[in-house]
Length: 188
Image 1 (cartoon, rainbow, N blue to C red):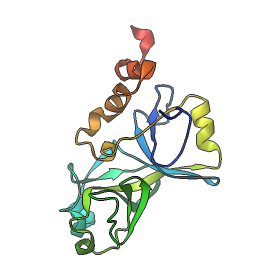
Image 2 (image 1 turned 90 degrees about the vertical axis):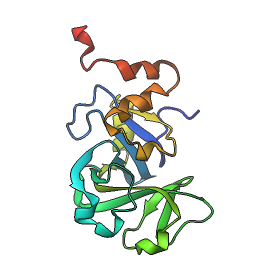
Image 3 (image 1 turned 30 degrees about the vertical axis):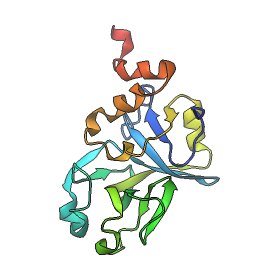
């Protein structure tokens, strides 16, 4: 098990009840890049009402359900980031950049026919979440985020509305209890 403050690519950030920023309340964020300059991730549990077919038609038949664009975060909302899960980690298609294991990013300029049969799952995000150098670690240290290991299919869960609780429920120890915590424990 990895320490719950170890911020690195491939891990999940799960918003704590103390996090009040409306961009991140009850979110689960997949970290896709972490380096000395900062961190970048996508919010996994904010589907938009916009079907992928309306914006990126060639990819409409390749995305996991629900087949809509997801709101990846408040930065560059007009940019698209594709998160993909490979069928075989030893056979990545052109345009694939690994993040961890079979999970990575796919360049949407890659012709769809070149990735056909190589992807197990694909999801497309409009925008991303970004943090400057040491900013994210500061937010973790102040208690805004739980940092947990990801599972390969976390980025593609069908029931995105219950993702926050589902990720917490599978955690060891006291962290799992937070999955059933009411929004305002003081009202109990």
